[in-house]
Image 1 (cartoon, rainbow, N blue to C red):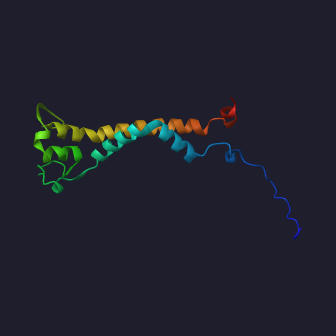
Image 2: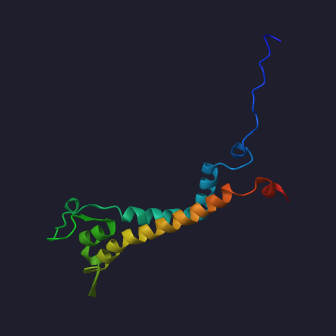
Image 3: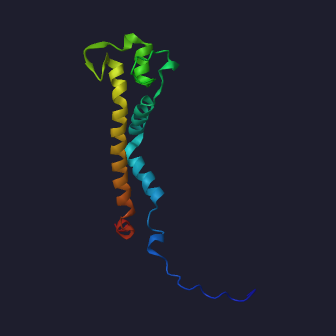
Length: 140
């Protein structure tokens, strides 16, 4: 021995929350997100999310009518830039007759709905993962 022995540390009981067999929050969250999305789900939600990002209409040279929002998004901008891609429909829906304008105005709501669903599904999965019994999972 090179030196005096250190006295044992009092109260060395391992707390329940630090059980190494219990999965961590980060691990459960990552596993649940990967199971929930998969590749196609991730690409689809990424496209919907990207299409709903607002940017100024001035960037594409679109005019702002009095009382309208000065912003637009990718789907609506596509309709402004290429009018042949956005056929006009008969009745006004969401205050426009342009098909891509209607879709562009609906995308933020769809994105919010997908976000709420994804957060709930991944949250429930993560809760179940964190509260699962690690001894029960290891039995055949």
